[in-house]
Amino acid sequence: MTADRAARVLSADGAVSAGRAGLGGLRAGVLLPYRAVPAPRTAALAGLAERLGFTSVWAAEVSGADAFAQLAAAAAATVSVELGTAIVPIGSRTPALLGMSANTLATLSGGRFALGIGVSSPRIMRSFHGLAPTRPLAAVGDALTILDDVLGGRRTFHSGEAFSSSGFTLTVPAARPPLLLAALGPGMRRLAGERADGVILNFVPASAAATLAAETAVAGRPFRRLALVRVALAEPGADRTPVTLRRGLASYLRVPPYARWFTSLGLGAVVERVTAQPDLDAMADALPEDVVRDLAVVGTARECARRLREFASTGLEPVIVPETAAGDVEAYERLITALAAHLAD
Image (cartoon, rainbow, N blue to C red; front, side, top):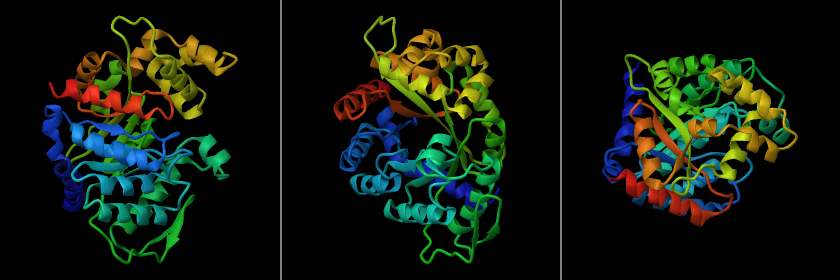
């Protein structure tokens, strides 16, 4: 572990320290909406999240706004909150271009940026971008090698199975941002522990959070462990979770990497039963209520705040994914505002 890497992770801690008091000392982030919301609105939401006391704001990328452009606008709308991608795919841009974008955001944000990358899904990479399939671990390994040189201000010289780069050097390198790797399976989690500054987990059941926190801990150096946590507000005593949440969860069960992830968690029978349904509505209806409530935080704002604190006590850093209808900015604002009020208690 180099002193430079330790400084990168610790600098992220320092960048968000100003917001910690706003949530009663809890370190928690929010994911910006990435569907059906114009970029100017997401920049305003980043400013709101900062004022509410959240310590980080993250942008994902599917088919809406460009994540780096979103965060550039967010950097101008904020002062101290950490900004990061969670995630951008390694295949839709070359690693050298990813490094350029990360370097630019690190400069624009005054050192508040963290680069979160991952392999994405077959539908996004093959169907949306027309890219040939690659072996995920090999592709990520190539990307990390090239990014390590680019962000370190060194000339690239790598010929890999999925990515190659030779002779590229940043002309104006910034202070190196932390590099986080999205991971589901044990191989990718191990690679993150060996070569990245942190890991980004997804769909972590509350019942398995402590186990996964222990499995992803890295001895001897600072290593961040983020987890995307879906949060949905519900009326007191509601016996059925919101349909938008159920449909969202069901849609992921059709994605092979996530189906394997849920199966590894002991939910293989659920995956088989749900994916055998004829359409998404039927899939959502077939999801067992206890499984939904284990994979997501559902309840009143006070109940959700309590569960998020319990989740964070395992050592995982929650990044809240507000479960609201696509494009409903007002509902998103109400959710994070109510949640922050109770997290600050």
